[in-house]
Image (cartoon, rainbow, N blue to C red; front, side, top):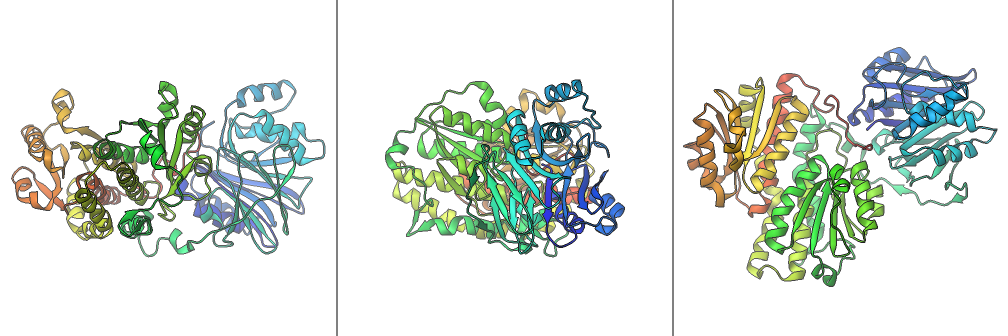
Length: 609
C-alpha cells in the first residue's frame, strides 16, 4: 500500500524524505507529498503523479528547508488522485498535518459530525478526518488528542503526525497497518517499511496495534492507548541495503527472479539436519498433528496459489482434507472451524489486512494458527501460535516471484515434517522427497539458464490481446500463478483453466492465433493434457508447452514451442514450471514498455480490505 517516511534530526528533512519515498515506490502510488516544519511554520507540498514530479517542484528538497518532516506516497482509496487528495492532509486551522496508510471505515460519520460543528473539509479523503479530529480534540496535549482520536476511528491506520505547537516532536501510531521506528544518532525516523530508512539506520522498533511513539532528535518514547509508558526491544536489520537495490539488473523483478535459487537455499538448508526436517521453534506436537481433522489455508493473490499447490501435497501425503480460501471470502462463508482445525496463514508482508482478519476469526474459534511470512515481527507473525519465516530477503517488485518460491518450499517442508510425524509415507518415499527438496535450488538455477528461448518466444507474442494457461493437478495450480504474473505486469488479459474444463465453456474463446500455454509436467496426466492440446490446436491456437525433460519429444509432436524443466517429485513441480513463465511475463511486459516493478493500480502490500 502507500508509503510513509518521517524524519527528525539535524539534517535537512526534505531530501531524506524524498530519498525514503523513492525506496518505497514499489508499494504502488498515484501521488506524493511532504510536510516540513521550519522557522516560519508547517509547510506542505504535494502533487498528483510520480514522485519525480514532486522532486522537481522541490528541486530535490532544496527549496523546502527544515529538519523535521513527514512524507507520503498515496494509493487512492477515498477520492480520485489529485493534488488536493494527496497526503499530507492538514487540519482546518493548520494545527495538525497527517500522513496515513489504511482506511478509516467510519470516516463519513465522523466527517458529517465535524462539518455539523463548523469544520471545513478540503479533500475527499478519509485521512483528512484524522487531521480534523486531532485539532478538534486538541487542548494543548498532543498525546491526549491522539488517544481520543484512536478511540473513535474504526478501521486500519498507520499515522505520522506533526503539530505546529510541538516543532521538536514527531508522533506516530498504528493499527493493522505496519509502521516502524528507526533509531539514529541525533536523528530518528518513522517508515512504513525498512528500505525507506536502511541507508540511515539498521536499528528499528516495530509498533504494535494502538501503540504511540513520540520522537525527538535524541529520544523515542512509547505509550499504550491508555498513555502508560511502555518499554520495547529494538531489532537489528541483518540484510544489506544492496538487497534492496537493483544490483545491475534493469528491474527489481528480474533481479528477484534470479535470486530464487539462493532464496530457496536459504529457506531449505538450515531446516534439514541429519536427513530430517526441523521446523525452527514451532510448538506443534506429534499428538496435536494426530488430532488434526482438517487444514485450512488462507491467503491472497500469489500466496493463495501456493495454497492450491499445498492442497495436492497435503491430501496425497497426509490424507487430511485441506480447504484453500481467498482471505477476503473466508470470514464471510461461515467456515466450520474448531480446535482440531489447523489454519495455515500465508502472507509475504505479514500485514495483509484480509488475511489478518481471517487469522483473528479462526483464532477466536479455537483453531491453531501456523503462519508463513517473510517479515520478522510482522503482525501476522506475532499473532500466530507458530510462525515459519521464508527468509527470502526484501522483495521490491510488486509482482511476487521469490516470495512464491520460498512459500512453496516452506509448504513442502511442513508436509514432509507432518508426514514423518504421522508415518504416512514409507521410508523409501521420504528419502526421495528429501533428496528432491535439497536439489530444488540447483534445479531452479538450471531452469533459469535458458532465458533466450523464453525471450524469443515472448518477442513473437507480446502484442497478443488474450492468453490462456491450462494444466491439470499441480500444473493447474502453476497455471493460476503464471496467468496472474502475466496480467499483473503486462496488462494482457489472461486466464487459467483446468484443462479438463475446456469443453465446458472456455474453448469457445479459442480462435486462429490465440496463444495457449499448456503446462504438462505432471506425468500421470500427460496423455490427457495432450488431448486437450489437440483440442485447442484444432481450433487454431498456437501452443507453448512446458513439460519435464523426458517428455520433450512427445511434446514436440503436439505443440508449436516447448520448454522443458528437470524431473522432480510431482508435487514440487510448480517450483520449476513457474520459472520460465515468470521470465515470459517479464519479457512480454518489457517489450510492451510497461512499468514492470510498479504496475498500474497495484500495491505491494495490501493493508486495507
